[in-house]
Length: 335
View 1 (cartoon, rainbow, N blue to C red):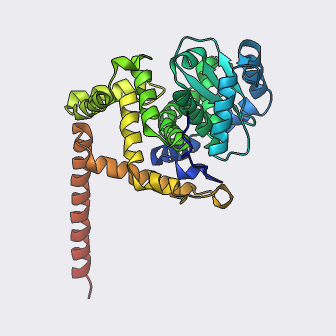
View 2: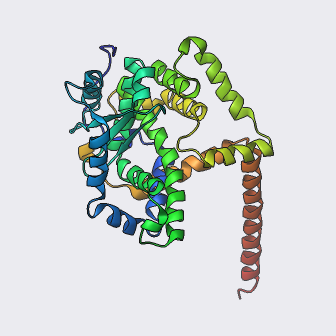
View 3: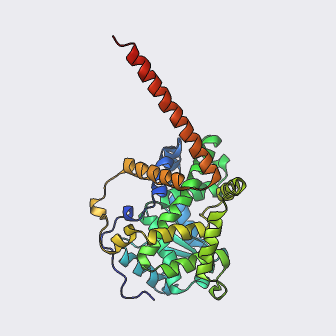
């Protein structure tokens, strides 16, 4: 478990691995009307303490004497990522394959018991690094809001229902994008692609890897990408709307693209932003996100995206033609 070649990423800032789609979606989320009021209402008093007490009461807290395997792996994650604090971890008795990071002032990780049973040490390490990555990126506050909105009746919240629904929709959209950043954190923590890919395979097909093949799984991911009829595009969009995470094949492709990029290798070589030098770059985040989506739209073969792109090109050309005509007319009126 964990070869000696794993490099400690001293002082690394989360901005080094944040996915541009995550940053753009989070910037958009922060602009949603009513979010600030909801945050103050939920966390200005006792809500966070209530959530923590809930997990203390019905889960098992990881310590040196309880789930020691998890404790050792998490300590290693925190050391490699050079993070100043170690979050608590709670094990929940739940057959659903899932994990999460929640909390605001003292965020913590929750692992369902099924995760421990299904994963090797390296794969479990990736899950812990993924959840720790959410905490390092500051995702846990918004994930907690989402958890509360999905758990508590809308009628119990003293803000208009329509605002709650708008916030919930924006949160779900951002939440899916945030997983792409956390996947990158897991790759950086382990610095090996194989286990990250096998983890995604187990999420999709269960814990028996002997029945799966990573090359075929990549071909399956390509098959999904290659379904490009109008109806396929519509169904992809419709299917995604109900998900809390991007589909495993989508995450697989995104992670492999980043793993083969110069950005990932540069981080391993020690070229990355440090926490003590990182500033608030909200405008840059929006700009990066815009450029990311723009490049995706321009390169996409999806028929719905192509139709929107062509419509935009047509409108753009018409607008340019109108500007030229107005400019010529203005010149003719000059003495």
